[in-house]
Image (cartoon, rainbow, N blue to C red; front, side, top):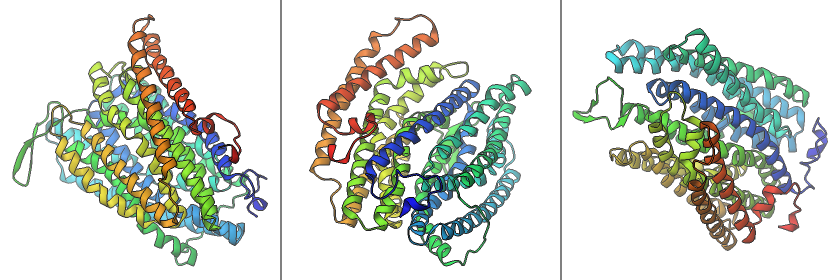
Length: 565
């Protein structure tokens, strides 16, 4: 039995226990830890906003930081985790822990060797671009800043991918807290750099302070690995190094890794492609506003700070996404894999359906609050020092459209893990390949309108993410011959939208009533944002409860028996 080999003596994941209750309980535990990570991450973003505003320096940092994050999603928490978790779980189920530790040693060695090759190659590419692109005024200097920060932060790619794999192992053995807390180290290092070390070393020089932040990112990656290794050993995980790419189990994972990496790569590359388009179509202050492409001369439509604007809006929707839904999906993945390995399809379908409903419920709630209260939230968190009221308007406008897509972002995480638990890595790939051209086409079509500009990236995401969720759900239910989008799901969605209307309306009505009631800039802003937020959330949950949506109980109850749904 699974519970017999767990070194921590965990029994909350043994087969006889309610899987859904275990998932929800684990998700709540992860959510508490992730909340701390997201809070420190939010403090990090607040300090970055105060130090750099939405200027070219922040654009350059956001662009360079996306490179290691691209490969983290591609080889770390994306492909490697999606392929390794089901394989590792099956090995434990069928062959025992000894074989599982050997599989881990081979996987870790393969990942590290591959990443070292990638990092060295990319460093050479950046160096070549640097040498071939001479500085031409402000524009050339700004793009050289991007290259310098990219080269400096590339080693973070290695450590963050290893951290993602080690975190997946901890999740497999039922230890969710340390993995969820590891990102806090990165946030603390960046907070120290941008809020203390940088200004102390280079006062009044944000152009140099940003390099201090980049160095802190690399150092934090090493600290995260050093933090997780003793935790793994304390949980009985035997770490090792066995570079054996011809091992049968490793070869099976490699065959799965390619399509999964391509699928994750399409999603991750889509984000990176958005950043590339954004930088190419942004004119720097004091730089050349026109550019040419294949003999066509055009005026760059985006103003300086466009990528920073998009990034800040993304950070705000990623906060609830990480605290609520990613924690739910992380806890659900091992359970999905165990049920699929035993071919318990009715139980598997029930858990996927319930997790999907809960994810959409959370997405609609958080998205509604973003749409209704985007301006007050951005003003409370970011509008200080270098972050101006104009910047608040730009970020909150983009945030509205990301709020419309929250339900889809949340549902995607559950559907992906449903596919991966079945060993189906190709279907998400083809769905991603299909929607990527549409995403790029919509962005390039909308970005030229003065009333849209950088919001084009969010609008295209609303359309393509929603389409991908619907297609993915239809295909997944055909794979298991069990309906996921049934009449009960349709009824639940209708009731969720009614609750969203009530919650959004209550928040919108409460917002003007609390303006100017308190003195003091920070106190007044907090009251103007958090007061309507509390009113809107309460209205949403009350209406959802009156409409008999069981997701309210799953969120607030410590234990909920399966037959009480």
